Image 1 (cartoon, rainbow, N blue to C red):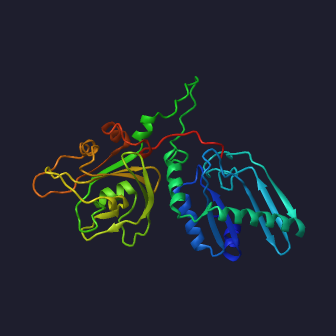
Image 2 (image 1 turned 180 degrees about the vertical axis):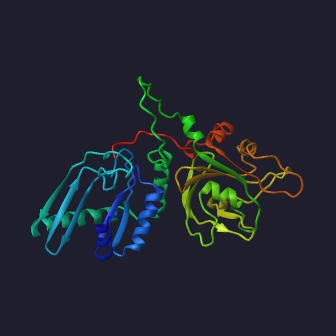
Image 3 (image 1 turned 90 degrees about the vertical axis):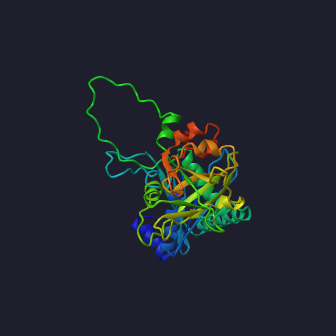
Length: 343
């Protein structure tokens, strides 16, 4: 969408885009496309969300027309910068070898292709496979894509060391424990509040450090969170803006809290929210009530209560520490590395 010709087309004409969400598409990609749709009046974007677990939505073609003639572009590479062979400007060489064909269409062939496309699209809409980008199922798939390691936030590349005089052994791939040690987690107690108690309350410095927001006035960015119960069942994704309160702290409402009544114990144990980052702006969380058997395990991760006024406790750590404290935690709470199917 950053190409000037594409921006001009989507701003002045109609551009209908359908994207798959089977593997590498993330929440950040969906949000970028949503922003483009709001900025470019002619751009319409839908996600193709199917239920065939072993299949990918993988066509790569574009049809352009003006009047009675048109052009069909069919390529082997994904219609992304990386998929078309371009890498970061600092890279020394291109990334892929790809091929594409350009077919000029007369009025007869253009009519055939448009008819085939419209028939296919009508069928997918009838089967409810074309979804808006903010559809809960689409967001859930994007969160899972990030969790499975088909996307990792880019880190600055370290400087290349001098070539060794003798061959060095190949570094092994990251183990599951190493992946968890690199994954930030956050545990916090939740205060009773008022009738809407299901709000995780964060000190400003904790919130900015963990969720990646600056506490500036007018912050409108959102994060996407998804609840997971101790038995592994997943809730719908929730779009949540950061809410700044009078105390200068931040709050995020947790949809999972609607299923529970606020409760404490005789030891003044409180509900706990456990967050694990699975993408730049995507997180899974588990809400643990004092009556949950797992509550005690996660409670042990928090610092001890101080003297004086009862304050809500919180702590940032890596996901490996969470896994060590809660060995039976649901697998889907944590990131994994999977070999992606051909994309």
